[in-house]
Structures are given as structure tokens and as C-alpha cells.
Length: 143
Image (cartoon, rainbow, N blue to C red; front, top):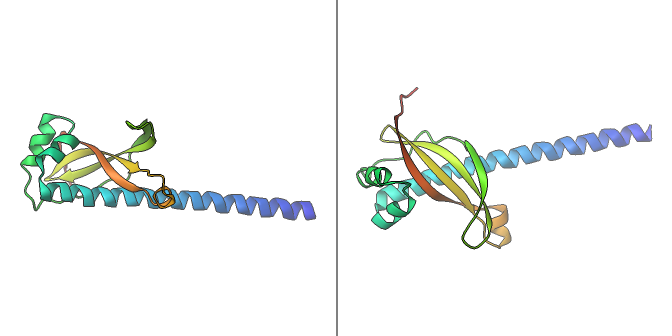
């Protein structure tokens, strides 16, 4: 009987840890898309040519962002659509994640990464940063 109780307890703990991992991942995904909206809206309002040039994947994207009205807001931002581990210029591994958002009715591909500084707070609550932006040339048809 003790063995059966131990197996039930171990199964319960395993299920709880699995549930907790799924909940944390879901929160992190939501956090990434809300950070994307905030950061992208700030890029649009500030309209700094050097920032837009640095983030734009190509000249077409740069022109698109420079011509946006400062009232334009990111909308219909997706959850993460995929990702990969990359190494930055300092040799630090970063998770680069792909999102899609809509600006002025056009789909925009956005790649973001988690800024991972050595502080414990950044490990637990990393800050999302835009890595690159690319226009798709596709219009958003709506719902």
C-alpha cells in the first residue's frame, strides 16, 4: 500500500510541475506579444531614422516605417510563431522568437529576443527586445 501511495504522490508532483511549466511558458508568450506592441508603437511615434534603419530587414521595410503616421498602432499581434536559439556578438545564447503583427492593414514579421543580463531578475523576468522587422507585402483581410 505504501508503494501505491508513493506512485500516486510522484504522479501528482509530476503533473503539477508540468502544469506549472505550461503556465509559465504561456505567460512568457503573452508578455512577449505585449512587449512587442509597446516597443513597436514607441518606434512608430519616435520615428528615429537610425533606429528604424537598424531594425528594418530591408529598404522596403525602412520606407514603410518612415511613412507611417505617428497615430498608427500595432494590432492583432500573434502569439510566438516559432523561435531559435542564437548567439549574440558577445557569445551569449539568446532565444529569438518570431511574431506577426498588423500595421495600417499590412502584416509585419517581427523577430524579438529576450535580453538576458546576468542579474537574477532578468533570468526570471527577461525584457523582450525587437531584433528585426520585415514587411510581408500581404494585406490583412480582417475577420
